[in-house]
Amino acid sequence: MVKLPKSKRRSPGPFSKDRAIVRMDKRTRAGRIMRTIRADLIDHCGGVPSAAERILIESAALKATRLHLISERVINGAAFEAGESEKTISWANSLRLDLVALGLERRMKDVTPSLDDIVAEINQEAPE
Image 1 (cartoon, helix red, strand yellow):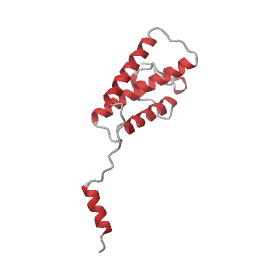
Image 2 (cartoon, one colour):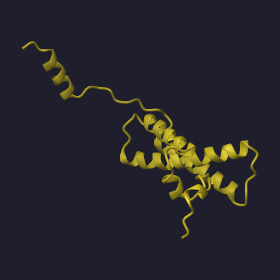
Image 3 (cartoon, rainbow, N blue to C red):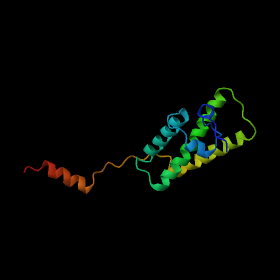
């Protein structure tokens, strides 16, 4: 494989290979979009997602980033090339299924204090 010099490397787009998007520089526009979507989905799951939810969140964030980039291209007047519309429809449907699996109702973060928190608070308030 021939490596292009940094100045010739293309930024990841909606139809880049998965590894290119996952490894993208988090400072790029696409990286910021993906990071924001991931944070929003983690917040949606109450702030502490399970291992299975984290996998779904990563999958959904990747698809949502791709769909966001596609939407921008379409808004800017770019036409779909051969096969792109089918991929777009597939990603949109797959994203919908990921979101249904995560749950469409937002879960509130559990802020109930643990027994250790209550004991520590009582010990701080008790006069010595």
